[in-house]
Structures are given as structure tokens and as C-alpha cells.
Length: 306
Length: 293
Image (cartoon, rainbow over all chains, first blue to last red; front, side, top):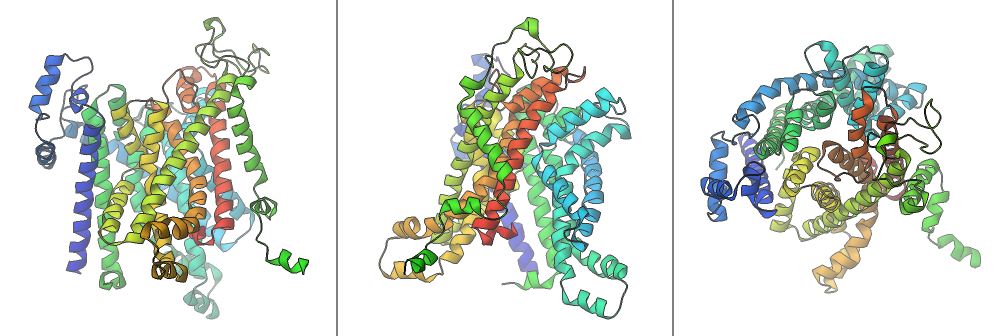
């Protein structure tokens, strides 16, 4: 067990090193990083000062080392636009992103799981077909366009919901739907296939042979076991949601991390852009590690492998 | 005797199109968009990049105030929406296909090399693949676009860099099982060089999977391109890209100029939906191994 965790941990650390190398490497290969680190329109003297301050005249490995050291100290630089440390900004926006992601997740599970079960229990029925169309659209429509059309319909024509901003629960509805549809489709597909697999298993046949009512077979025996992979995916998706909400948050002016990234692009605020990408990657690596370890705790077959 | 040879003859590629469940409508739509993209110059009634400010925010022809001159209305600079949609098809097609092919070539080559050579080469390539797969694709693409600045060429390179990992993963898995097959072992015994085996024996056997993946990736790539353009780090204005049109459309949305928001989105939707349906069908038809995906 300890060996397994140590192995997973070392893989994750390696991923983090590669992640920092990727970001470090791309910034330096594609041009002069000093130009990215100074404000647009800075004078040559300012650029030179920045080059000296960040040691950009040093050899590459020295630069990488100081990049990692400041990263470990939680120093991701200063935002040009807000004039505050980037990390502070990031954490001030994180709760908003989390709120949006949680509501979108709740929505995607509320739609995805019941419709997935229904589709699996009655393969080929009307609901199965309707579910297929729903999931195909969810996987094909760009979320930002869904958001724009929602605004057009519910804010401009019907004037039922606020078009942008935050504050009340009503502000959350449209962005959560726009963000959650894609994930609802993914959760539905997985619930359906997982449920179909479980329904074909021996213990379900036994439960039926025992003469249990169908509702009990599906609701208690099949549902619980089919849910495990879906909830795992949902766990990963929550983190992914936080990180892919850029366009939806931009459309609805929702003050989360995605919006921060958008502001970073529009104001050419490079430290902000770099921080959002880096922290997003770290978050996902951490969640993957957590899931690997949890799986090993639950399922001995995994930790005994090799 | 002639009948016998007929029976063993392999079905031609065109036979696929006549087989059951062929997604006729999606294929028709994709071919239609490609046709429009190629003949954009002849089809577009107006210049897509130059408008007349006097004619701004004209509604589509069938609405009050619309005219036959601007069939689908005009945008905030008085540019003809229909012409921009037509030229936008060209941008989406060019960016979509080149990015998919670029990512496909890089991913397939690395997947074959990684799977066939094994050892430390495999370790290095797969660790990089895993790390890059962990980065949210859209955020990673935005980061790269923010460094190199917007242009069509850069978008293609960025999308290629972000999405090759998907190919590498799948192709490597296939190569691992191909490696154990008799014909590959025979080739090794016969003294073929590693490069020859990879090119002559492995590549032809994974090309079908690469094509299926490519079709499925087309939709993803087009949505990502639209999102990047929408955020202002994709195709630079005044080029008519559908994502860019959506961003511009926001200017007239709150006063109800729906055509600027709805129409470009419908184009994106049709293209992505068609690519996904065709990809799903190809996956089942060409490559039973990928059905699980």
C-alpha cells in the first residue's frame, strides 16, 4: 500500500515538474519573456530592468531554478492591472468559481443520472432516444453559444433572468445550465453504460430470481453499484469545470477564475494568465492523485497489482 | 469461378457509404460547408470585411426593415452577415482540418514510436502526454495564444500542440497489441529495420484509428477555435470567423439583434454535430476496437 502511494506520489511530482517545465519552456522559446513581464508600451530601460530583476540574463537552468523556488514560496508575481499579488487575486475569485461549478454539477447530476438510468432500463424507448439527442446536443453545442442564446431568450425577450453579474440565485441559473449541459451529457452516457453493465451481472439475475420487485432490483442493487464510476467522473469533472468555465464566465460576467483569465488576456496581464494555467494544472494533478489513492483504499486489487 | 473471386474481393471504400446507417445528412452538411468554403469568393454577395456604417444592424430580409440586399442582415459595422458566414466557413474548415491533421501526424508518430520502441522513450513520451492531458485543453490553448499572439497560423499550431496527446494515447495502445502479432515478429526475424517495421507494418494498421479519432476531434477543434476567437486570442479581426462574429454579436444582443448571435452559432453547431455523427458512425464501422471510447 505504501509502495503504491509512493509510486503515485512520485508520478504526480514528475507531472508537476513537467508542467512547470512546459510553462517555463514555452514562455522562453516563443520570444522575449521580458516583453511579457513588463507592461505594454514600457520603455527599453524598463525592459532591461525587468530582465535583470528576474534574472533573465542568467543561464536557463538558473532561471528555471529560481522560477521553481518562487513558485514553491507561493510567489506567482504581481498583476499589472490590479497591482496585487496574483495568488491573492486567484483565491479571492476561487469561491465564485466553486459556487458556479457546484450548481452546474448538481444540475448535471440531477439530469444525467435519472435520464441515464431510464435509458438503460428501457433501451430503445422514447426516453432513451430523447436522451441520445440531449447528450449529442450537449456534447456538440459550444457552451458560450448556449449561454448567449439563453440570455437572448430569458433576459432580452422574456426579461425573466438577469443577463450578467452575480449576487442572487437567479444570476446562477443560466451560467450553470450553459456550463452543465455538456457535463450532464457526459454523466448521462456513463450512467447508461454503467447501468447496462451492472444489469447484465450475475447478482442482478439472482436478485430477480429471488423474486424481488423490479423497483428494488434497480433502485437498490443496480443503482448503487452503477453509481461508483459516475461519481468518480463527477469528482474529476468538478475540477475541470472550474478550469473550463472561461467562456461561460465571460459571457455572463461571472466573477470567477475564468473571468480572471479573460481579463488577464484582454489587459495583457501575463502573470495572471500564467498563474491561472499553472494552478489549474496543479489542481487537476492533485485530484487525480487523490482519486488514485482512494481507489486503492477501496479496491485491494489495484494496490496489490505489481 | 468469377463468382468465387467476387466473394473474396475486399469491399471498396465507397461500399462503406452504401452500408447501413450511413449518416447521409451530416455528410451532406459537411460537404456543403466545404463547398461553400471553397467557392466563398463566388458565393458571397458582399465583401465580408468592409461594410457601410449607414447600413449597420439591418435585420434579415424577412423581418420588418430588412432588404433583399442583405439577406441575413448586417452587423455593428454594416457588414453583410451572410457573406461573413460564408467566408467564416473557410476559416473554420481550414483551421479545423489543418489542426486535426497536424495533431494527428504528431500524435500518431509519437504514439507509434512510443509503443514500438518501449523503454525509456516510451516513458518520456507517455509522461509528457499524461501531463499535457492533465492541463485543461482550453486554458492551455489560451495560455499559448497569449504568448504567441493571435493569427490563423498560430491557432493551428496551438490546437495541434494541445490535442496531439489524444492520438498518442490511443495509437500507443494499439501498437502495443500489434507488436505481439505474428507478422510483426516475422518482420523482426526477417531483419527489417525498426524504422521499416514502423512505417510498413505498424502505420498502415493504425491509420484507421487515426482517421476515426481525427473525425471525432474535428468537432472539438472547431469549438475550441471558436472559443479562442470569441475570447479575442483566436483569429484576429476583421477576418470573418464564426467565433469572432459571436463576440461582435454581443454588441447588439441586449437590444434584440438576434441574428448576430444565433446565426454564427447555428453554423458552428451544424458543423460540429455533423462531424460528431460522422465520427461516431466511422468509429463503429471502421474500428471495432474503438467502440468502447
